[in-house]
Length: 73
Image (cartoon, rainbow, N blue to C red; front, side):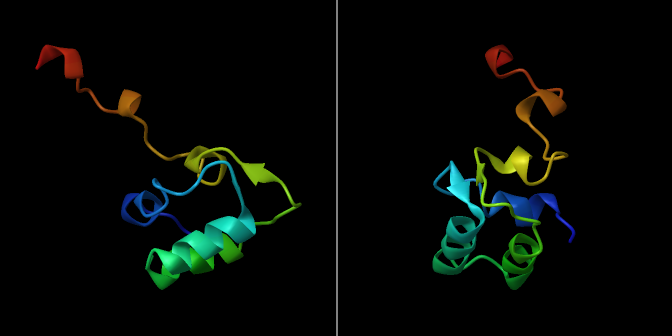
């Protein structure tokens, strides 16, 4: 399983919180690339619900990771 920023961004609009099956369904319905669906299928699932993309890919960059301050513009 590998994630890139482009692949993970396909799940930003997912209906969080969501289970693995709901995320796969969302990916299929939204036309996400096959790699996204395959990555979701490879998640070791124990029936838990995921609250955000960081629960799936802990290295997902957040706004804090960029040196951009919205209040400056």
